[in-house]
Image 1 (cartoon, rainbow over the protein chains, first blue to last red):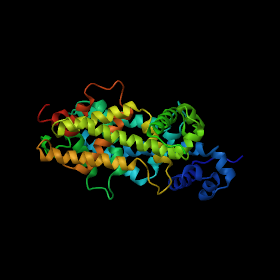
Image 2: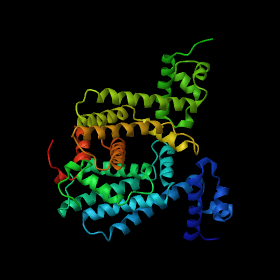
Image 3: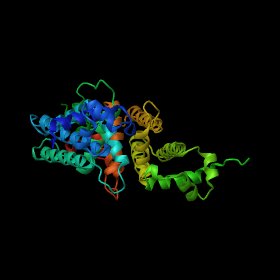
Image 4: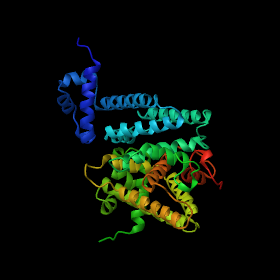
Length: 196
Length: 196
């Protein structure tokens, strides 16, 4: 009995990501993925029972990567505001490096069966949790005081999604700083008390 | 030859909206839509050549409704800030009244063919245009001065999308005011100069 190895699984997921990224889901065949990964079709099926299974594994992998990336880039930042900027910077970079991830997530959300769990929802919840923890940190440290955290976290994350999805390339210089400035101090320059 | 009437088209679109809203797209048959609209299948096909055609017509209708609604609710508001609040209030109300519209839009976006026009994109562009006109208005009237309009409009619209999609029900009191306050003056209460 041949064993499964993480390295081989990774190779197949990379291949699947590349194909799902450039073709419509129903156009991609398991055979194409096996070819792209340079493994036999039998091998591919030992790891993933079907295309949906592969798709869910792909999203799970992206989720782990995103959360690890956030931790890594936020760790060295000092102070809640810098950590918030690091969060924004890391999120933009992560999605920019994987331009098809949004489509993968949206597709999974659209095509889930009614009542079925949507695989990215846990990631979304975890990111919300982390940003709210940052809000608490900012308050505890006297860095900033978010007046309406429940609305604010949605405005920040939803706004960030639109900036990533529809904002121009190349990204403006200091995009993360600008996003955080607008978020904390307002889009209206007249409302700013202190300059940064 | 029987003529087509807007009223009858409307009846079929209503029926289709109801069915697409509660079932997955591929589960809905043209026959179900005809039944729901209480018209013959032949009549339905005289108006819409297939399900995709109906779907596009549905999104076009929603787009017209949204833009008309925005105009209607923003017209009586005086001053750019009030008009911005009216914009937020109308948008939240519109999507809350049609809880499945987001799914319809997302589905259309996910399943469009590569390079094909996505039917909601024009609406998105038009809403962006109107909000940016409001920013200009705010500046001209000395109401507010948006420092980075290109990023700000994305942060506002994306944030609003998340608030509508993931925010709690019943909606908080004065949600529109709170969204506009956070947007213009910042989420950080310490950054506010003037209270409203």
